Length: 288
Ligand SMILES: Nc1ncnc2c1ncn2[C@@H]1O[C@H](COP(=O)(O)OP(=O)(O)O)[C@@H](O)[C@H]1O
Ligand SMILES: [Mg+2]
Image (cartoon, rainbow, N blue to C red; front, top):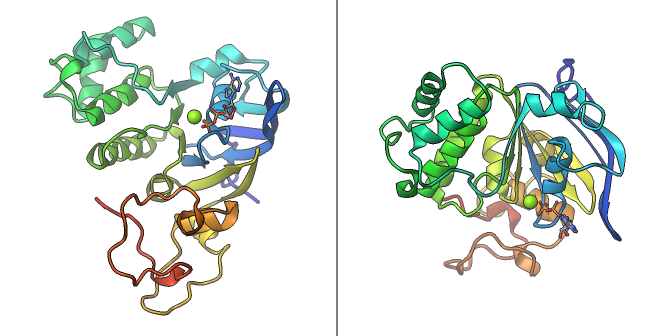
């Protein structure tokens, strides 16, 4: 299957394996990411998402398999890979004592970018942080902090960026702000590989979604392709496309009905959403 529209993939992963002592985490992971696209690596907690990202960003060595990023082999050309990427982890890496602008300018100086002040101002503007740029980041909201973190990762314009669970721990409003920031990245041609446990995040942001489960990619496709894996929704009350949540739990088992990880916290009002009534189920879609 062509996954990159004929162009050389920005990220190419084949047969990746990794164990931590006896724990076999990756058991032959394959996927390609097209340049300029947003690719979501979706998986439960502990599925191995961070392990994949760490191998691709040369922080960790694979036991077997190959991976290239921006055309460079992660094992043989680590320096070139590191020059091609930036990595934003789950915890924002901003310095709280400094202002947003100072954080950006510091990174720009560390990366020996010309005119750090100008680069900082441009990035503040791009991520709607101009007004906050002069304030210490200790005063920022979670969403602003994460946006600044993403802005910092863009200093020097790396062609490939890894966002490891960029919205974990953020409230819904902040999550939307980060989604906008991610779309803004890909809109300018940056290739984005993001990991997430949030099905909605993948559903809203990604051009392609791959589900990592028990050490392998069990499906990889566009949301429409993933939807076609399930039979059409049974129409009882309201016809509705299966959500990514439906597809995910159909593939990996478990789910809100039978004790798996539910992503809707509170009790549902009313009884119209009976178990198995996929056609009419409403999932938590706050803040579209
Ligand atoms: N350095 C390590 N040593 C031992 N086990 C690890 C290490 N890093 C991760 N693991 C284990 O490997 C599995 C996958 O971890 P990780 O890649 O962080 O998953 P995810 O990011 O999908 O939550 C987990 O069971 C985790 O506990
Ligand atoms: Mg992780």
